[in-house]
Length: 115
Image (cartoon, rainbow, N blue to C red; front, side, top):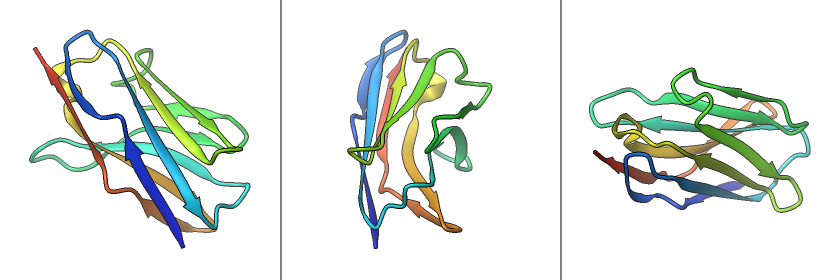
């Protein structure tokens, strides 16, 4: 069984920064993809960024240049450094792990950016 636990969300003013963390535990394979998704009120969940176990990354256009995804494979921990935050970044942020064809999700952490 796999568990993902996010932390680091909160309230920040526009232009500020936050760093999200996602701790993975359980049966974690060496080859996987970890990512961040977000869901704003009344909207569908959307892709934010992912990072493959080898280090390759991909970002949504809306966050490119402002967010940085990284991972510590030894600690099975995923990070999302969010800079230059905008009110439209307000959402619940979810951690995702894809391995062996299965998707796992965390419970989410709220990020609120005030204008």
